[in-house]
Image (cartoon, rainbow, N blue to C red):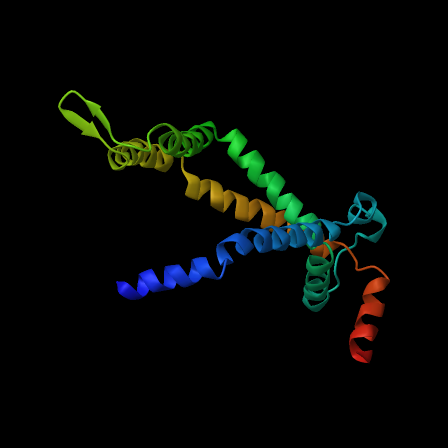
Amino acid sequence: MDYLVRANDIFKSLKVRRLLPSKLRRYLKFQQETRFSGIRSPVEFFDYHRISRPADLNQATSRISYNTRYFSGNYGLIIAVLAVYAILTNYLLLISLAFLVFGFAAINKFAPDATQFGEHTVTQKHLYTGLFVIGIPLLWISSPIGTFFWLVGASGFLILGHACMLEPGVESDYAAIQDNVV
C-alpha cells in the first residue's frame, strides 16, 4: 500500500495530472479533424454514373476494400445517423438510457454526502443500488442487444452494398502506382 502512496506523490510532482487533459484535448481535436476531413462530398458519394454490378467476387472484394477506405468518413456518418435513428425510435431504450445517465448525474451532483432520514442514513452507495435495481431491468426490457444487432445489420447492408456497387474512381489507379513507387 505504501508504494501506491509514493506513486501518487510522483504522479502529482511530475504535474502529469495538469498536462494529461491538454494532451487528451489535443489528441481528440486531431482525431476529430482527421475524421471529418475524410468525409467526401455528397456528389462524389452518390455518383450514380459510377454504379455498376461487379463482374465477379474478386472485383467486388477489391471495390469493397478500396471504397471502405476511401469513404470511411461517410460510412462513419451513416453509422452515426443510423444509431441516432435506432435510439430515437426505440422509446423505451431512450427512456432507460436517459434514466440511467440523469440518475448518475443527479446522484453525483445532489447527494455527494450521506443524508439522514429519521433513523436511516442514505449514502451514495444506496442511491446507486436503487438506480441499478430500477435501471438495469428497464434497460434489459428495452432490448439494447436487438437494437445493436439491427444497427450492425443495417449499416453493414448499406455500407457493403454501396462499396460493392460503386466503381472506384480514377484516383484508385494512381493510388496503386503511388504505393509501388514509395
